[in-house]
Length: 238
Image (cartoon, rainbow, N blue to C red; front, side, top):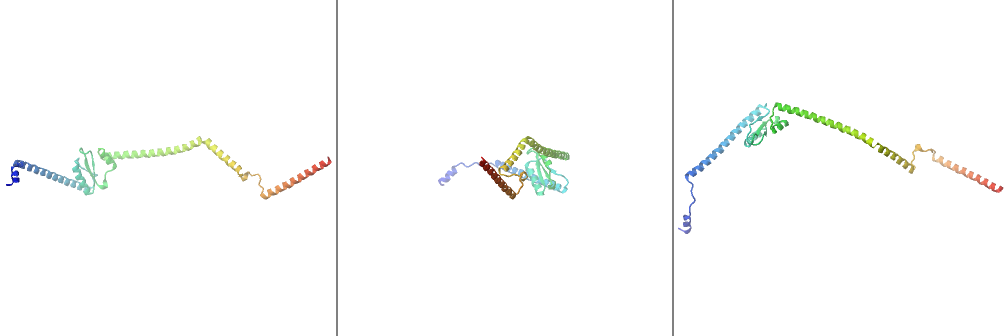
């Protein structure tokens, strides 16, 4: 025997499990397998019941919804899967881990916003609650319409008042502005000789005006000549 073989033989071998321990481990494994199998069978049975309920619900077509009892998330997932495969809607309401439950609806008869609001708030949905919500909505819509009409009237009234107050408050300024504008226009007309035709006194044509000017010059020349002759005669006499 070589040295390595003698060393290995001299080493302490690992302890081996006793028959009792082996049997205990085997039973534990078998029990776990049975548990998994039972859970699987239970889920399968639950799924079959859900499929039957959903199929009957769709076939009947008169019920507003199909409500299930509160259940864990794993079972709700099965209900959701069956509902989606069957072509119907499913919603869950309630608090997780306490009373959360699924409800199935036909697609053409899905829940209203009022029903979703009530159920999500933990309320009970029935015909009385539906009628109450409808009345509340009608009253709310009427109030909104009244508020809208009132706001429109107030805006119109305020607009009219603002125009009146503006004219009253700035009447003196408006008058002064108008007067200044008129004076400015008049001064501009005077500065640039722009006198309105109705204000002109001389309505003669250019030819008439020139003839009158020449006549005045001739007359003035004759007067000046007469005055000069008179002065010369006076000086001669003196």
